[in-house]
Amino acid sequence: MLAAAAGFALLTGAYRLAPSDVLALLLPGSGAGGADAPVAWAVIWNLRLPRILLAILVGAALASSGAVFQASFRNPLVEPYILGVSSGAAFGAALGLLLPRFPLSVQAAAFLGALAAVGLVHLLARSRGDAPIVTLVLSGVIVGAMFAAGVSMVKYLSDDAALRQLVFWLMGGFYFASWGDVTVAGPIVAASAAVMIAGGWRLNVLSMGDHEAATLGVDPRRARPVLLGAATLATAVSVSVAGIVPWIGLMTPHAIRLLIGPDNRLVVPGSALLGAVILLACDTAARSITQSEIPVGIITALAGGPFLAVLVRQRTAGLFG
Image 1 (cartoon, rainbow, N blue to C red):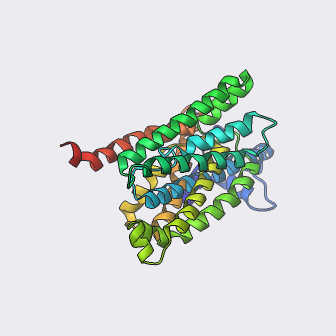
Image 2 (image 1 turned 120 degrees about the vertical axis):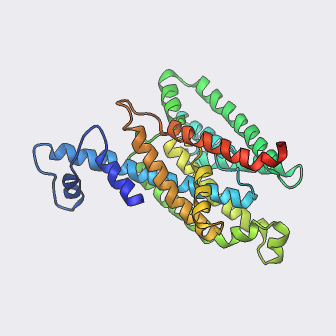
Image 3 (image 1 turned 180 degrees about the vertical axis):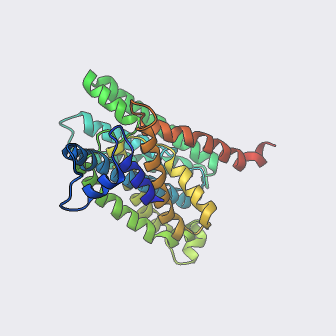
């Protein structure tokens, strides 16, 4: 599915290319042929290929992070967007993006903002006991609103050019994807994903509860921060290169569990692969539906909103009727 989605994305766009030309361009030492060969080469290597790779990286990062958050908090309704992690990362990245004298890079600032958000959500939810679904979601809403207010303050203090840049960035998209972004995000996402995938069996134990996990030899105080740190780092770098892309971290793990079951040793890597496919398909649609590109965050929100509504209705049906 991922290979098919990537191949379709390479062929899709305002500049039409034949499959034979794309294959020729991807082979070392070959050209597309014809008068437009330099243009076709630029379209493939400078525009579409880095954009495709970045969409794959971000989709895999957000989906696997969502699976880790859900298993760590033992809550099926959490993901980076709902927990406010994306808003925290956006606030940090906005500071790094718009303040030239800010001492941290965009990625470092986004990571610190995301880490602060997940820590605040955890503290607020745990303050009333065992972090039930309603308390955890409400804590995410509160923290997300706080950091959203911070982003609004940064926008208010920005000049017109910087404000336009920030607004488009917050909508989520890969308009300015480059090989530099792929170089920055690739190693971080790969390392974070490796930690999360390797910790799949620990997530299975943690999902039973802290007491049971300790009985089985897994220290929640050590295992959970490592896994949450890897998920937060993956989310932070995703936000820093693509803006806020909501709902991928919520939809994908549930879809994978329906396909292969609840074993997190399979759910985490499966979520990464399916998340890459979903986000790549959404990005291809975002730049192909109309002549002017639609921010991919809008596409994912349109799909994720109804999905969350159905899920919430199923989970809370017994509480209200």
